[in-house]
Length: 273
Image (cartoon, rainbow, N blue to C red; front, side, top):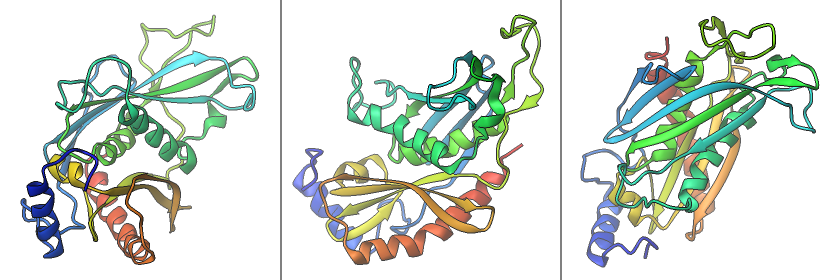
């Protein structure tokens, strides 16, 4: 049984429904909910987006700051991702020191963006070896009805597309009186997204509601994009929870993932400005 302390009745009911290929909302097990994207939800961010995936709602804001390069990448800008799981989003979230899921969310989004190389960090150098642009991605779940990581990945990509780099004054400090016009240096052919496959008993499913997510025995988060705009490429992966994934499970995921990515990307592009 799931580690979420779900009742046996709920767990067994969902298990039987999944075996029959049924869900309470009428979707197929490997079918994603519809989503919408809204822009400019923060006037202080250089780029922002709100995504509603079913009843799950996530806001992502991107800020640009001037900082010093990391010692191992003096010729590149920096990337930072943070996330706050506030109690207003879910009764599962508590105030106080961040728990595992609050750490997992930004780390997985960071890995998805970083390992896809969608941001050309080499073009974010202001003064080589001294000053670079720091891209700061902040993730704020507003309502959690499952699949926060997947919703956050959509919101992150949408927000990054809107970023305008601030203007600098003669002292190489941000000039807050001027509005930036230069876009963030993104590789046009790379638009990564994350998809989480869950397992309940012997059934695989995606994009769970909160109740389905709490019942799950296992999961794996996969970051995917198009390599040079053509072939599909998995560039990040993290398994979670206790249930093992069989060879058949992996085969089913690899069969499903490319179409899932293409369909989601097609929907997302309709919202991109």
